[in-house]
Length: 445
Image (cartoon, rainbow, N blue to C red; front, side, top):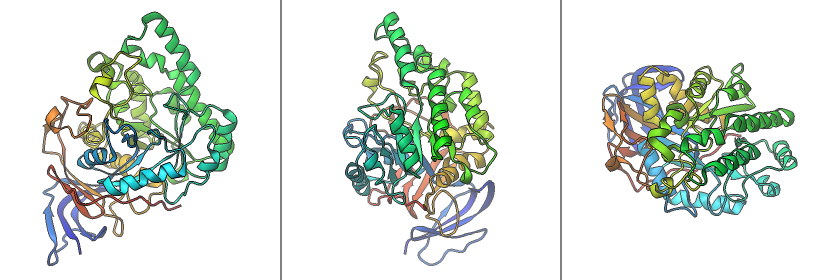
């Protein structure tokens, strides 16, 4: 039987930090206490005062498999993620082919079962014409539905209002949405192309993909969710104005409408375009310092429920193309936890609140079975973070297949030293266990 005892850790869980030990037996946390004694054949790890967190559950990643594996794969993305303290991911459907049938969705699960270092689920992609397939989605074995209500690849833009209302009325699954108004973006883009051609200054990106575009779409989605009673989760919010659409007056488990923010929208502002250029081109766009402040305020007062990465790798040469050709998105799974730890160490957020938003709340929001907390009987998805191991992001320690990071050059005060997935030590001080794979996530629905 696999048996590991983690001693002398600062255990962060459910709003508290307490010093203690955690015993792992097989896949599970079997005991939490202050002075657990090791049994024979138990591996002992002295945490030496490092923080022990539940493994991060990232509710939005794009690992690019199938179809775009020159940028990243489930194997390479999950390997970088486990080094960053992420133990579970929900991957999005806009691959090639898109996961818009049950057969194509299941093929992604099969690939992950052979190659993912961490636990996995995949969202089913809604379109204007696949409602019948969408309704076959198994709520106990699939994270939820993803709808693109703004520009996307292929035919995944859902812009038929009758279809949208039918989807919202027909499923009890979490409907996660990308909210940007297509017509507003098209109009703004055309005006800028007429002025600049393809080489639009990157500083215009948040003007093209504007506050107005975000607010129109997110407010419409929320109105539809209220009308139909749908369970709506709005991805990657970017504007202070949108924060008025969300509430903090009921517990998360009772909310029908929830909100996510991504690391990059908490980290960068439009002033960073001058230095970073198209490397920080995301959809929705990074906006103003005022918007960033509004996101932080809503995160801290619980109008925003979840922090995610929206990890989306592209090749560097693709990102360095002129504005209209440079794809949106960037790789972040290796660095999202340590970046948020940096914010905690700089007193922008407490470590307990960070764990709530990155670990507990995704588990609550999506009804993940026995993950997201340090609890006896739960899967031992755990992360040790040493806040006394300063390091800098540079080419030789970036693990993404695409080989770059928008955070290159950034110095962090903390480091992920150990990551446990289902009770197994998968990442240990820079060394990976390549023989063990993650599990398909089950949902308690």
